[in-house]
Amino acid sequence: MTDRLEGKPVAEEINAASRGAIREVSGRPPPSLVSVHRGVDSPFRFYLRRQGKAAEAVGVTFRDEALAPGAGPQDLEARMRTLDRDPSVHAVLLEHPLPAPFDFYRAIATLRPEKDVDGVGAQNLGRLVAQRPVHVPAVALAAVAIARHYRLPLSGERVAVVGRSETVGLPLALLLAGKSTGVNATVTLLHSQTRDLAASLAGARTIFSCVGRPGLLTRSVVPKDAHVVDVGLSSVPDPSRPGVQVAAGDADSASLDGWAASLTPVPGGVGPVTVAQLMASAVAAWKWIGRAGSET
Image (cartoon, rainbow, N blue to C red; front, side):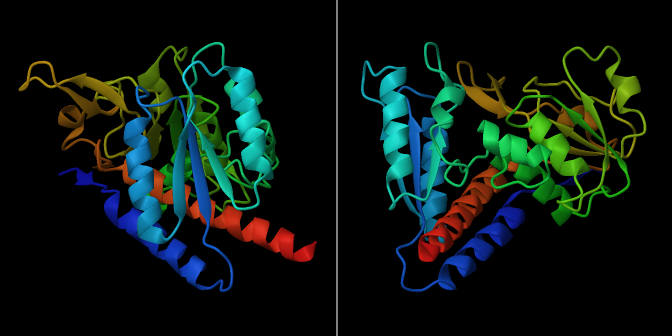
């Protein structure tokens, strides 16, 4: 049987650590996280609801800020600069991707690295390459947290990352290979131009997939008894309910059942851990900014 690597117990451990870190600091307002997004029609709304619930559960003050109808790139950048200067705000998350004419990376560059809580700005990504990270994308951290919790083979082992986005795949590969993180895996990075997926995955003990292509990983390409951490998330039609969309990962769970050693479910795997990891990063930002303020 293929083991299910549920995200809930991992998220609970991270949340407990976040609550403990807040309790250790007295005499300061709690951490504050602001999510900036496009508004009610954005698919980001579902993620916002989860953020709000997770923040309340650990003691982080949370608010979401929607861009005004008709707002342009300059308005967004001005809002981000205001949040960066606001001493009551410790962490800022910006919805991405953003539609044209918005430039996500230009907007996120208005934040100091400590407030770029999802670690997607150029400074934070550059520090990750240098193995001196401030913040790291929460999805990448969540994938590693699940692998560590379930003691998947990582250190000194061959692992594969399928997907090379700058917000998930590339940071994840750096985390897995890094000395500073203590993971020390030997990483193969695959992507849409990889010609022979099965041959490239051969020998990988653990596979992380973050492509967003349902059914990509089947037993025809995944080595027998490999562990699969499915980071992909797509919407597909529900065959039992016409007109209804359901979440799906990159892995074909039916094909891999009894073939892979273990597999994270979608939903219920990386998702809840990502939100918990985001709150942990907000708490870390609060502590960093608090220490900097006490030294001035």
